[in-house]
Length: 417
Image (cartoon, rainbow, N blue to C red; front, side, top):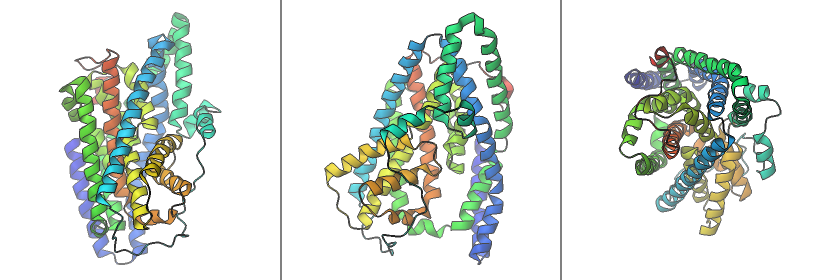
């Protein structure tokens, strides 16, 4: 599957480049790209179709088998401690590199007017909105809207209640466990479509944007991916401190979900395969089904690094000088808003726009980056997947729930493909 996805990426880029070069009419080019992307859109909708039930069923069963609310609280605190450290690391690294490289200075590009509209809906971040948003008005509504954080909160209550009831709820626990197996079986079928979706995603992007835009923003994109490489190195070193050389085996196991996240620019698309890879690594399902969904809301390392890169790029482009104190304040605000807007479409852009508004920096500067955002989102999504995999393995090791052998929690047939 990994080799097939790599071939699909290369073929997609070649087909997209051919379409971009042969179709002169921009409108026709956009129409062709839209039709090519139908396959990717269907694939991502299929992932969205299963993701809420998959998170709910696996997490509920994991919590129920713990049988102790204190265990869930302990695991949650350990996970959040790792998430906070990883978040601060990614934000700080982005801030240091942006100041050193001065990517927005001397652009030699026309700057958008400061009053130009970006079309992004932003609102001021408040702690009240974030806390209230954590709790779903209805679990069905949360699942329907794929509000993973809200599904997680409901599953914590539901699983905790099942665990407290013990044997009297064993039948219902078994049913939900069977539901988890069914969702994983469906996942196996959907993932067979991944190479085709990858081909369509890459072909569609290149058909619309071409490869020339990569040259225009080569400095910014190159620096951002170098920053991601530095972040991956730090995350792997952090993992090595706690799980030793096994972190290299983990990286080998997650290469497939990594490529899926990268090529589709969706870390959500990698979630089911990431769960299975952690099973193979020996992480107990009660840990992975709890920590991984939390990570998708609280541990978006790649997205947070991009936020600092983008904000400082725009301030430098417009010649706005920010003091170190202001930059640190901005960094802390980004850390909060990135959690408060989890699950929002194009969340990174929305978070950046909201932060720019808070510091009276022209939001129009985002228009400079929107043309290459998809290429940047590929790196962000893949980094989020890597960061969450390492975080889950580390927490499992802290809990003594990291075995040497694969977890036998899913049928062998599910793991094929």
